[in-house]
Image: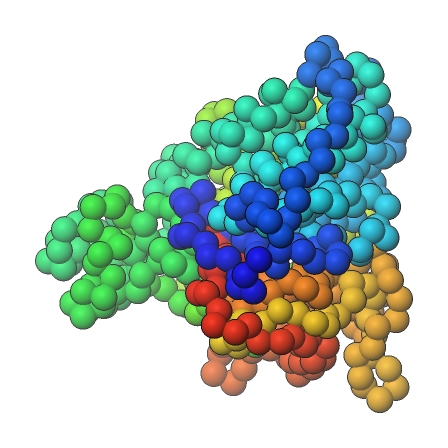
Length: 555
């Protein structure tokens, strides 16, 4: 097998914003630990996988567990999940997005391609036999896992006769739906066709306008030249400083700032022929919030600020690289307005047939204080990891449990207004932050040493040291502690843009600088440098062009 990283083609329009680390993966032909990614079916260097015999009871199972009486309050919801007898399986390259949810749900398992614990996590299952494969998307990873014989054998072993397993993931497509139907698994997500439609920034804007959740002043149009763009902007009163977005893709790659004909020439090839959203350029602060649309209404999670474009964390200009949740993200009237905006959008999504989890970017105009709808991500997001450990989650249940409840064989009647009011009050009592760390140097290496997954803390000299193995970040107590989730391990590759891992901690990671822009705190920079210092690798001779990694950014 060649000592080269694999090549990947350009992302498709289903690429998701702030999704899960290691959406695109690559690995050497054979690695010791189960921490790599598969490519073009077995060569001489990788033997053909041994087929594992699996049962097919699930394909013919009539339902999804015993029918329960109607659930009427949060206590009954908690009891329902603690006594759950239906296997609920999260598929992904890593368990990052929903890590720790197994604390709340009996029979919840992570089926992942990478195993950051090397077999030590009791609720993470990773197939052992992983021939060299080239994955171009998170959807391909999940479909590979679903059809893997080891995975199917594992699911069969934990599924009672007559029960259909429930499957959830960040990335999926129509092929995923067909696979699950064939295997007798219930994919507890909105239809892929609906999610693809709602992924469009144009559709989001239209639905928001109809729901009374307006975007930054804009016009939806098509233009063929600079004069056409100027004319459309002038008619809509948008001014000379414009932001242009095309319907699909990462916001950092499909958002263009245009204020001159030179800017137009630079980006016109990506704009002409597309339906576009032309916006007035404002000074804004992006705020992320997740929500769940249930039959009883929309439950709105905590608001978070975003870490954007820090060169120590990502090589992508404008690239998303983390979140902070703290009391002052939105306060008072602004929090109420943003919550109402999200609930209105949820009500409109219900008319489209949508159910379950979604993420919204809210834009705060720092000059006027106005709050606008940004982008909609109809899926689990990278912010989910923090959403599920907030004080509100521990007072009631993690937000994602409302999504699962919506798809289970149980009726419920919950007071969503009361839940939202309580969560808004509890929002002032907790503080969490996370950083998604990518390789920022222009290198291609095979890793020989990586930091361990687990709990770290600052010692008496201020050094960040590994304290103990840990399953997740739920037990962190203060700013002196941190949890690091490793993605690539020894034997895997790192290259510019590759996801290395995620660091979660209590306390802020950003401060407002004297220029009015956000900057990483001294503590954040120390944490980054300390983790990076634990990576080592050997250069790859005559490397192929490394794959583009869009692991946790926009979509």
